[in-house]
Length: 114
Length: 116
Image (cartoon, rainbow over all chains, first blue to last red; front, side, top):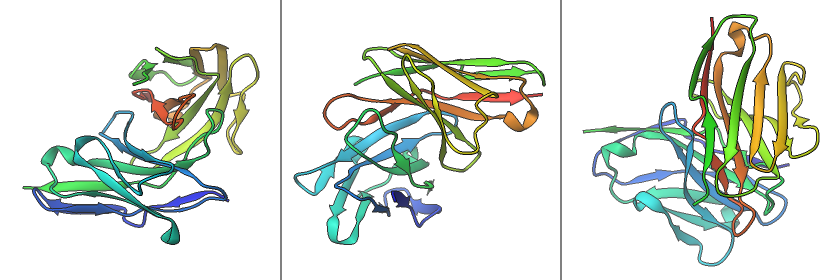
């Protein structure tokens, strides 16, 4: 069965500090993996995506994520957090098909303190 | 990148009335669209999969007679909340997955429904 686990419900970091958001997945085949960000009252914006190739992928807004097959993980990182990064972050996994939905983790809320 | 537009962004309606939410893919054709419901500070809950030209597929526990979905064209899906009640108040989001490359999901802006 497919599932996505984001162990951290809420993370607080200081502005300028580094960030890592954890994501573990369970999927029967090679998954397509995504990270999305959601600001309050908004839809979701794609940060980055991975299917194959280099296991370290770069996304928008200075984010990157590393795929580790042995750990079934796809953690999101940012070397220096900005106040505008405060938002809800969702990890998702899905098949390579437009006909199937993505499975989402429960999300991690990021708070950035000055 | 592909754009999905959802309208309205906010709606307040009286209990017992119906509300229609539109989801459009603006620059690509979406044979399939997905409707989600999101409760405060929670993840997205898939309600149904909307298929162009055929009946929607509803997730277990979602009342198909309350949440009517119509996908009449390759660029438009609608969700109608019928006989709305306060417990239907929520944030509703639609999405469509791209048909090439990574098949990433593109999301509408969401609709905040408040039933009073």
